[in-house]
Length: 399
Image (cartoon, rainbow, N blue to C red):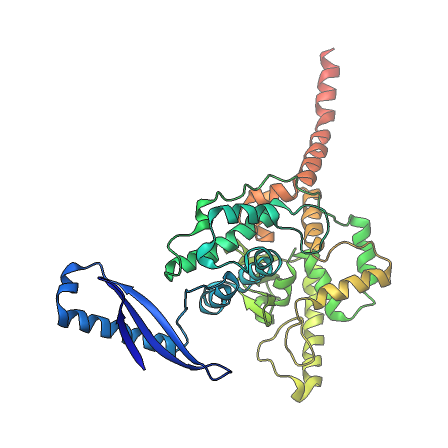
């Protein structure tokens, strides 16, 4: 049953039956309608038609499971609605994972128990002051983490405003935490001798890991970009590869996503020796596919895949890398640092920062300058020293 109850001069309560709970108690959903149009309130038939229409829409929302009851709703309950009705549809997997991490580690422990309509700006201020590291360590959180936690709660509460659960967003009344310009950590990389030792050691690994490591350094690719590579992206004749997607971790497994930025969609040239290796690997890959027979399930031709043709899970290369470096006695740096190694090697060879930025797919050359500023400064100093003999000879002649 559904009904309309008048609660005041311009206020009406819509009531819709919503079945029974586990104890057999009848469930009702209610929604208050306030009418500001005085002319409508004075016209009985038009008012009745309007209210019946609103009641029908309300009933359809309840029956479809789309109605969010605002009465005494806790933030934790609203977040569930936010996730299913907004986040999974509108946010990228990477952003959603980031938001869910902040929700689990920071927002729910501090604000989850509060009624959403009772959260005030001061609660947001206190929240930003109270959030701690998820691992329990005493080291303070990075300012970027606090900023992202703020952006997460602001997004959630903004949806509550749009869905008319609350009238205003308390987070919007609080200034976004300022990201302090934290000192850029000098990246960990291998020097040329270590790279040589690395390639000697990796020759004893399966062919796919040898190629994976080679491309990570030769092309400076991200892990996800390497996993997203298909043979259709590899131009063996012209010696280039096209980067147009990445494989990343999602909420329910791995997902394919577009490049990180527009600049990340790019062509990268490879050394002739690497192209020769890729041609050998192509023959090896085709042989492996043929041997797999009926086990092969994947239509796409990923360079780095399991026996069924499906790409490796995003954490698989990281696990292999950690074990490999330990097994081979190679100094451990992160797998991602092979990308930094690639850039640093190019810098040391005198390659311009703009070319390096384009190879790496950076959105702006300033990103490259920030990350590799130390290496670029060192290379610039060495370049200046190479000119020193010119000025030394000139000074001697003038004396």
